Image 1 (spheres, protein in one colour):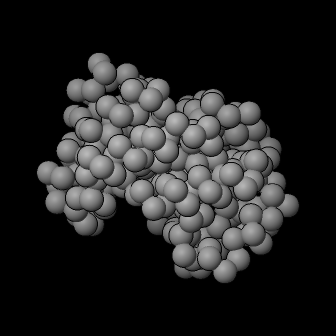
Image 2: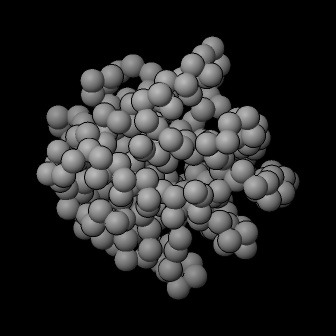
Image 3: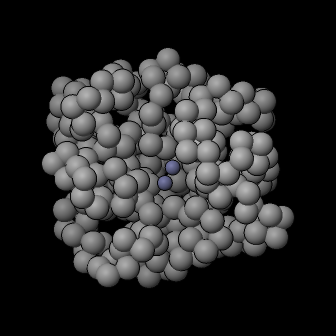
Length: 255
Ligand SMILES: [Zn+2]
Ligand SMILES: [Zn+2]
């Protein structure tokens, strides 16, 4: 059994066949799915999906791409939504200096504000960090004495950076990219970090793992990712699945 710790089931790529996608995941051994909000609309949709399936949970937050739309009104509405019992984390939030879809200053401001909100609500945070190691670490270290409850999702930095995040209390979430032949940096991370800090995700519909690379990603495909990581670690698929499932349950406080 596995948990897909980060999916975007509300996205239009799943409009036609969401039910079948979810059935396939369950039949293939994916026992829980966390569907992630990226703005107000998607957080509402995420809760709606989580309300329909007992084994799916939702999150609320504003993605760095949409940081310039994280107004006080939007954040207040999200805070009210987050009181829903299907909401298990705040996010995804953070910094994306690769695409820079929102101005950097706006991203930083929205990130800091949402960290405060998450901690006021006592929710774990889901951090998106792309090409922004330095600033992400600075902000997290300055916040609450640098002690956190959360995950660095779709991890794309190096092993040393993983250690820095783990020292602050974060889990490291390994995406399907680890199955790509040229992903030596991520393979190194997946091979060396302590297993009790690791979780796995699809980030679907994006970034499908080999052998589905280039296709639409879906929760079932987290099994391919888990297999590759188990091989890298020299342990069985079952053991890797058991440990990462336990970690995700602890992180999101679900059973
Ligand atoms: Zn992300
Ligand atoms: Zn995401």
